[in-house]
Image 1 (tube, rainbow, N blue to C red):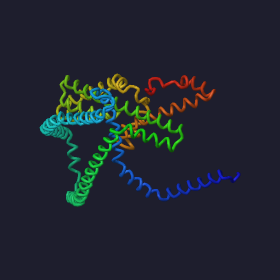
Image 2: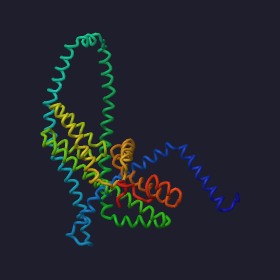
Image 3: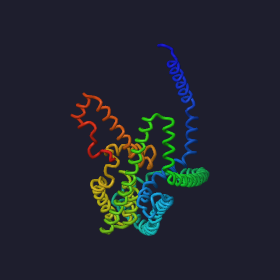
Image 4: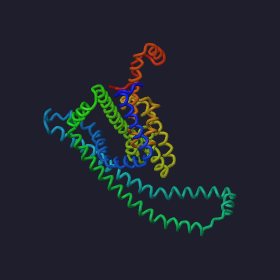
Amino acid sequence: MELNSDTMKKIRGLIVFTVVIVVAGINYRRLVDVAAGLMHIVWPFILGAAIAFILNVPMRNIERHLTVFGEGSRLRRPVSLVVTILLVTGGLFLVIFVVAPQLVKTFMNLQSSIPVFFAGVRDEAERIFASNPQILEYMNQMEVDWQEVFQNMVAFLKSGAGTMLNTTFSAAVSIVSGVSSFLIGFIFAIYILLQKETLGRQIKKVLAAFLPEPAVGRILDITALTERTFSHFLTGQCAEAVILGTMFFVVLTVIRLPYALLIGVLIAFTALIPIFGAFVGLAVGVFLMLMVNPMDALIFTITFFVLQQIEGNLIYPYVVGNSVGLPSIWVLVAVTVGGSMMGIVGMLIFIPLCSVLYALLRDGVNTRLGKKGGGTAVCEDACGPVGEKDGDQGQQE
């Protein structure tokens, strides 16, 4: 190998890269601590960018239909932003004020129904013990060292007092930190929404200054695809959740089941989590109705699965449609992986994120197959014509 200037430059780069990797591997814990500290610093701004992205979806439509002000009016953007914030906060407060009286009524009903439920359980247990005396004999033969149990309880309370105090202090610090992060992020989101075109031009200038033109075009295309996919998913998921919650409220009211409003609102909120969200409403509804009448809980369970089938087969495909463009099997994978990594937020983020990756991979595969003569014929026999969208799973443009 000839040791010219280019070869020496590559060797130096390889040596520097190897040294960096070795040093990072030796001090990986310090690097993780530094990364966590940096993440804590920039987290309010990441949160603000997320808030801006969510608020931008309704604000863009409001600004488009706000014809009172002219195209060049400086008041059009601030007014649309204020209207968006008022609509979002008004919706949240409306839900709270509608649900709060229902929650109070629910807890009052539970206060009277839970003793009746446990009295029924006690009577049933007495009946079982009366018909099966061997159970009582077995329980009488059991020996319990009550002094040791009492000592363990005292020791647990002594150690738990300090733990409870530390936990309370940590919770208070976390709440204050969370509120301050949200306020900083919300103010940052307002600045982003008011100056989004200016920020977009500045980012494009930075990319054009430091990257080649093909790379800039590719980055902008991927960014546009990501924004379009996330916007369609967010809009469709919110509309689908409202429709599903309304369906439950109407159906439960018609068949005269209790807690119709509470369960409808709860399912509307939890349905924002794909696949698994509505089952939280099922569990809560079954528990509440079980305290009143076990037959109501059975009827509600049957009703839930019927409405879920209607929603999954008829409503969801038309409301959310192909805006996500991800096959059902990969939706399940995205929800599972996202939930295990980031909880509920991961479930919401990973579906459109995987949809973007799926679309990029599909386009890349079709492009590479289009450049091959033999591979194209094989793919056409197995998968259909190269470059064709994946049927009903194609990405909406």
